[in-house]
Image 1 (cartoon, each protein chain N blue to C red):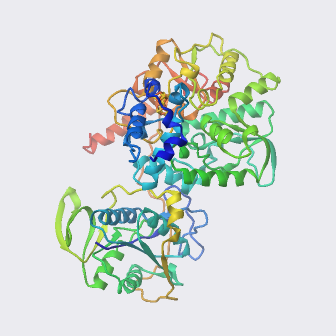
Image 2 (image 1 turned 90 degrees about the vertical axis):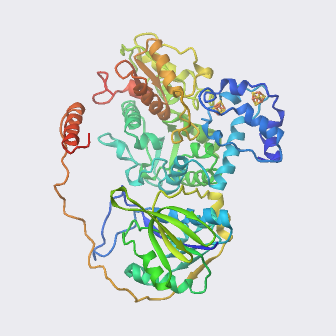
Image 3 (image 1 turned 45 degrees about the horizontal axis):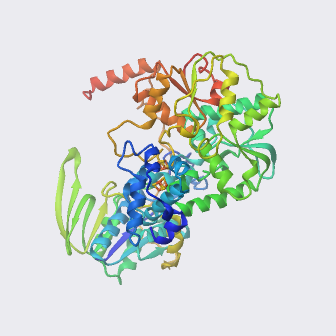
Length: 378
Length: 253
Ligand code: SF4
Ligand code: SF4
């Protein structure tokens, strides 16, 4: 990293207070120390210091939101990663995810022709070029392909249909949003995806772009040109529908539930209330809260490429700590509203041996449970 | 140390729905995604690692249509110095011998210590181009290398044999080595790198129609559905029990 890059991200104003590392979810379980990395780069300004452990970072933004000097810590980490990406020597799992996005438009190594297989029996309109819809539902790669996350896409489309919303998807033409690509430092591929997707969006007419994943939401909202106002996360949209009386929510769910704030929804986009409003509307009992909630929510380690990149550690994943906490607070359902959180937390329930006691569910699946999910199965 | 790496653009067929064209001679490729043949990617990485250690140049050679430039540019982005693309008119009719002959012809004026190929192409599975190329050039070869220790003018190469046996050979350069997957960890070609590699040379050779082949493809077809697989029915617990039973009776548990 050169002196220019350090200036660009305000790294020179760092006072080495250490608040970043103190809040960093991975500093407790890996060798990664973000304050230390900054320190090394500040002292050795002419050399490019790019320690391998920057790949532990989940780009959760806890550090940046706590930094008293406004250092662009996450952008700086993406910058460090981009140097390694340029040299090509990156974690093989990150390489495979990126290559898959280039080839297939998704990081999961799956073929494009199966992207809308999740629809199954559900009635979902696939938009053709030139057609218009009130709501364009951006499914996202994980809800499109992962069997567990597909349930969120199915649940949300059921809810939208019941509420009488004019909505449609782009079918197999939909392509990765690039949020994780940028965070893995593959800035060239990110630019390419922005261009491709901007072209794709221009072929359809829509008033709202609803995303299932907060990660897609984040990049469309904050990093794409001319999309900003149209982009809305599904939790926000469902609250809108319920306020307008189009979506009736009844509080007949008797489970005890706790909500886990996804980093890309909460910390990074300040959407804290809508998920809670929805949960409170369907739960009979009071919604439980973690001690670490809202802007203090603990990252599940699913962001920044960490869905693919494993790190060296003999300590349990933070997701495991999170599910143990959920159980400690007496929750039977750990609710979230992000496909990555859904997967990391579901895995953690297994490693923590809590399968019989705790279920992880996306809020839309709580509002509209699918076949066989109503009686507590997932 | 100068290396030549032969790479091939192949369709990814693992999950895709395959269709055979009406003349039964080739795959319909419209819905398929193409990339570098997996083993060739490891071959390329091996050449790049040697260049980093010993200096010299990596030259990429590929026989294929103009679209092959996509994978060639990736190889150039990863560090290959220049490339040769050979595009005869009757590409789909070529056999391994005719491909090897085309490559051998282009390498006549090149100086190289090593020629790498992948051990097998994932589309036609011939595993022959590397070996035939060595014969045509009159140099030594080793196929299916899983490990390689290189010195200035020779290399010690391991080949994995059936039953987990490992055979080790020493060979002097020049030589052809066909590389097995897993020998190294191929690097990533970034998009900016690929764009920058646009300025590197791809020499295009168009030999017209090329009729040197020894074998001809008669027909391409799907195998008739067999009875090799038994699908267990029942709850997860029941099916897991049945699987355990089978594994036990086969002595695997
Ligand atoms: S919190 Fe900000 S100022 Fe403090 S050490 Fe981290 S980057 Fe520097
Ligand atoms: S973004 Fe999150 S994981 Fe990355 S350094 Fe900051 S606090 Fe740590």
